Amino acid sequence: MFRFPAEGKSDISLVLCGAAGQGVQTVEEILVESLKKAGFHVFASREYMSRVRGGNNSTEIRVSSERVRAFVDRIDILLPLNGGVRQNIRKRISSGTLILGDGEELRDEFAETEGTFQNVPLIEKGQESGGPVYTGVVAAGLISGLLGLDPDVPGGFLREKFSSKSDEVVNNNLSALEKGMELARHFIGSGKILVEIPRKERPSGEIMINGSDAVSLGALAGGCDFISSYPMSPATGVLSFMARHARSAGVAVEQAEDEIAAINMALGASYGGARSMVSTSGGGLSLMSEGVSLAGITELPVVLHIGQRPGPATGMATRTEQADLNLAVFCGHGDIPRAVFAPGSIERAFSLSQVAFNLADEFQVPVFVLTDQYFLNSFYNAPIFDISGLRVERHLVEARPGYRRYEDAESGVSPRSVPGYGEELVGTDSHEHDEVGHVQEDSDLRTRMVDKRLRKRNGILEKVIPPVLAGPDHYRNLVVTWGSMYHIVEEALASAGLEDTAHLHYDQVYPLHPDTFTYLERAEKVVAVEGNATGQFADLVRRETGFLIEDRVLWYSGLQISVETVTERLLEKLRQEE
Image (cartoon, rainbow, N blue to C red):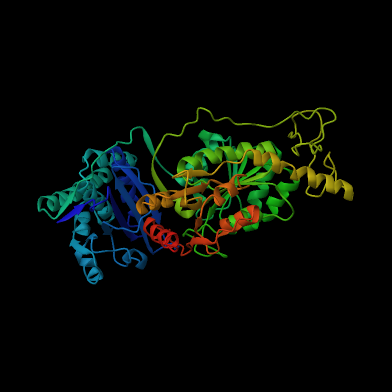
């Protein structure tokens, strides 16, 4: 008998995979929404290939009685909808893995694996329900039944999802769901499979949301009313969200012809008074670099969302990496004050995206929100975002007689107005200019204007988001992370049981918080965990503080690092001197 969860675990790890167009995403939607409504905690992460047609996509779904928010290698139940399962999935199969698949197509493929293959006539049952297109819904019914879901829960989801379709389509989906649940009843009744997930705490009043939507909602909460973008994986989800909700949210959405046009449109909108945003990936930001520099000298606020993926060049278009930190911190020629956020949780993606717009407007600088493919395409149940204290802070003044757009203010922040708001002209120029905005070649003026712009760094530093320290106050070891590594390392440290080890996580990676050196020097051993090949954040820490983090766990395969791998690597690093 297969009994789940495995001993010592409180969750089940399901992996669904199939060819593009086979409905893997539909199965995922049915299960995630139904499991959440049934009172389980759910985490899911998608992985897909960069092919217009073909390839094999997959989704990991963790179902638990407690909060789960990170990717694991462990596969308890694997449900492939077709053959050709990718090697990185096959490597994760163990003796404890139950493989549920159609024997006619898959039995030979899994003959040499450690997992136990169990024949399930998914294709046949899908055909009986109206055609092979319903095979995925049969699979969703099978998993729903094994997890003990009330049929009305996934059934209600299907009725809602296909409400705009014909009665025949709705009934065929419901028939396929029932056939899958009937298969589950057969397995349970025969004593082959037993699934019992204790429900310790029910997530009440929570939402299922992914990183992409959290960034988008945070931007709207920050007053974003203009977004321009050229579609580029994995950042396109933000553009798509804004386009779907443009009318109701009051956002002007422009799909530009390229990334250069996108950032220049955003700056033009900002000059006119809009709260502007662009969304792109590393390759797109490379093209936008001159626009970032234009934002620097014109002192126009703009928020840049960057969905990181492996480079250089096209790299791996639909995979994940944390290798664009240097690009965000240093892109744009000349000296440009800026802030760079890298949220580690969906909740912080919402709040920091909101903060980014206020910060950009207050200091008239580019502000970056760094995410990555794994973060954007992962989702879990989270409390409804608290918006009670959020405000859209518009730092605009009326251009009255004598107004000077680039006045040499002590703080470095000149009074900002927009065309039409007041009697005076609002000048701007990409050349070095005087306080009014007229082009000048005066070297003394040049020095004053550079100094004025750089003084903004002091104000930005005063508002820097402090890192999150978890674990013992008097720690011997310190693990340092940024961005999407947060929940993975959090679970890895809990799994390792290292009582003398604390976790220091940065949601704002630039400027660094002034207390950074103090945190680091208190530890006997510091380890940085990053999703790139060189340790870009560790190098940034040394540049800014002088502290060298020698021990680094680096991961750059294009696949997301797992909780198990982080646990293993950290134990190796922290036990080297024992």
